[in-house]
Length: 463
Image (cartoon, rainbow, N blue to C red; front, side):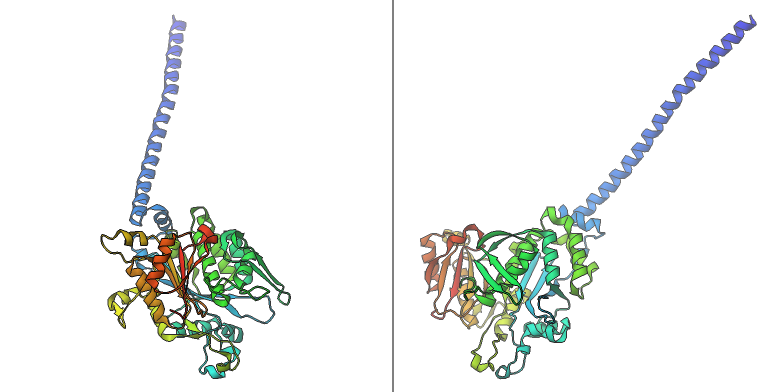
């Protein structure tokens, strides 16, 4: 009997142990479920807060990047227009540092507008053109002083701007930056064949769409003329004017490619290359504040131009080739590019409608002709020394509803030319000629879809 009782107790104890053993995993499972639910809840709350902040910051990739770097909805509003003077310095000649590329660049994160304004390298900065010397040219200031602020001050004097920042891009930096982003897909505007053995410079490109790496970018941006003396096509703007335009359009292509989604991850390395290679007074921490909003930028909102002026006869400038900036035209251009709100308030000047280089077009309500005209993108280049002529032609075109997307200056031209860049119909070309009131129609549509305008008008002295 005693043995039976002992066996029963052992069986009971073993049964209880088995039940306890089974209950422990169940309790552990319940505990892990609770922990998992808490973690999931925290993640959902955090994700919801992050999503809300992204929404408040404008949504999309821009809003996500802004949120990730700690911005709120007021950060963008507090950012002013970013302006910097870009100077391209060639380092292939020992002891010489001429700034042959001088561009004012600006970006407004709130309006998503940007500007590239070229300063002609031969712009005269002296006091008397009749006693001009080579060091009076703006591209010589840095070479003489090695002080970039002196060049910046000269640009402010010529333009009336108040630039605070400069960035000198030396040859090595340009090559490394383009290689980090590129290769850059770019339409080379003309055949280029130039050799300078003294600088070990050899430039050879065929007109057309090309893949441009860092080394090729240096050669492309330095091109001005061929070995036989020919240069860019007249409708593009030859010699220095063509080179400045080529530089601006290549920068536009670089910006366009940089802000693509697949290149966003490269922005950190790009800033790193810039901080190591650029000579600048920029604070890169401040610059980073603009990056989340730059991904929204479209080159359709980019305005490009060069300072207006003229090249006097050498007999009047002590035998030195200089570019004399037209102060009145420059003041007008600066207003159009950087202070358009002032033009809105002023309305008109000297009885002429103020025109900007933006894509805004005038339309007449109910007019189907005007509506179709607005689809024609027209570039107007002034080949005269009279800035009012440019304003007059642009006004005529806009009154008919044409989309004047670009304006600028080119070398002195005797005849007005209206170039068909994209197989625009003969009827439309004749209508444009009739609107302008002068000009010979030229077919230069071999560039095909690469051209960013449909028609280029070069105003000649016969206008």
